Length: 322
Image (cartoon, rainbow, N blue to C red; front, side, top):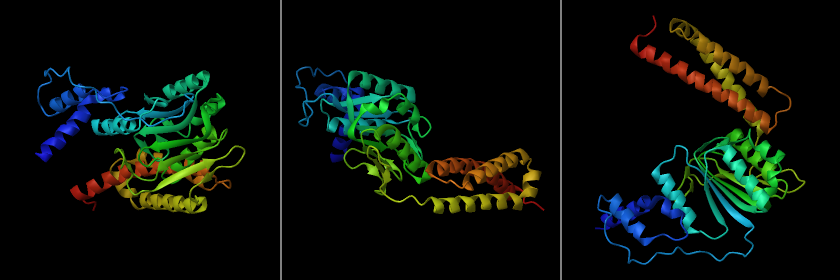
């Protein structure tokens, strides 16, 4: 019985769908969602049932200050959709805005609208899939455009940016993304941006980084921003050099197999990427942006190596080289 009730509750949440956007959750829709998700009928006469109102927190009267939720639902699933909507509704208030968008252009257009209307974003939550240095449609390459258009003025004093995506703040690419968000959007009025160093669970109330580790970049007007933990760029440089040395050695050891399998073009492409990565790693000025650029080239090297090593290993299992 308890299991049946739990299934009905979950089905109700997923079955209501877009109704969670409303100012109140319609009890009729909740019941119908449960019946639909449980395989029942939705034709019951429920018109006389009272509306179920969500609780709201007391908010300041200044409606020009808003909390903006940006949800990039590209490639998401009902569980992530449902958990995001529930978390949003759990603390809904008049100054809270939810926007679903799938492109940087949409995000820029909304910031333009808020700036023209005189709104200030006190808190920005970005939800969606991520990887090191990328949160949905945001990455380090497109944030400068927002500052050049003066859209950093859309963020109020001490604004907070919370990125709820997997691995967004991981490694030098993740740290660089946080730095770019802070320097381009928050430096004018001060603020902070936080991202997860690991996978992020999008669960209401208890969601977050699976290991509880985050990275925060804080900035004040006229001052250089600071990370919540030290980024050792020289140590990262040595790790990158070691990786490139290993890949070069691997290709040298498997020249015969590469030649027999006709993988010469693949090796040439990897070799070009190795040379480019080494130039970036060996530059005298090795700041966070430089490190992130080098890491992107190394990621390309790693991807090419995976393709070659998989084919070599498959060949070795099927027909060992004489």
